[in-house]
Image (cartoon, rainbow, N blue to C red):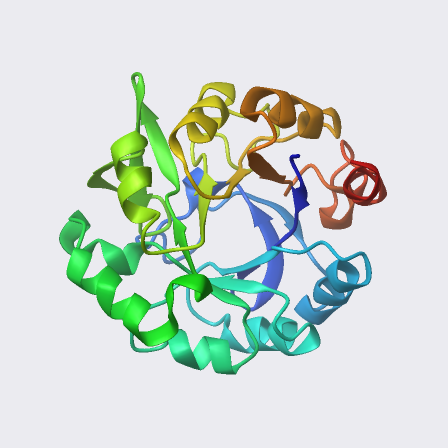
Length: 257
């Protein structure tokens, strides 16, 4: 059965909701960045909210520098209850586990020069273990294919999101996180083709993020994936300033399904 999964996106030390495709390392002044929501409340407020409602599998994502303190505040609020991603490497992964993360989420580190490195993945597994690792295969659509994107989804890698990739990588992690970067933050609907494909291809749990705009999307993802794919809401959710989806309704879905 499809579950509602939470997110806490942190940018420049604040909880925000950002249109994914507008993040850029080259945009020093931030003029190109499109932000849907900036929280007045700290990260630990959202961690407590998810903990109180037992929204397990919630991920904390650091979007660039200046986010460590806010991330640690969230992790310490719900110790061993949140996942952490953003800048995770073999060198710092264990430190994040020690700071209270249930699991670490890795993307860019696995793709030096945008090329997949099995050696880096094996090194990471050696540091924290398969059961503590989530591989983020966030991607952009190119024709009928999806290509893993790194560096805030700016750079396409040499890796496709397909059955071969998911089967192979599933040996090294416990879960996949997949942001559909082309629709992330737009609230224009999920990538239904990708959701269906992830259900067919992945032998382990997958959480999908990107474009969800109605509580009914939980039922849609459940139908498309046969209950094999979970769903995250961001900008559409009322706790992040959205008007389309009520957090309470998502929590109720988890309780009644």
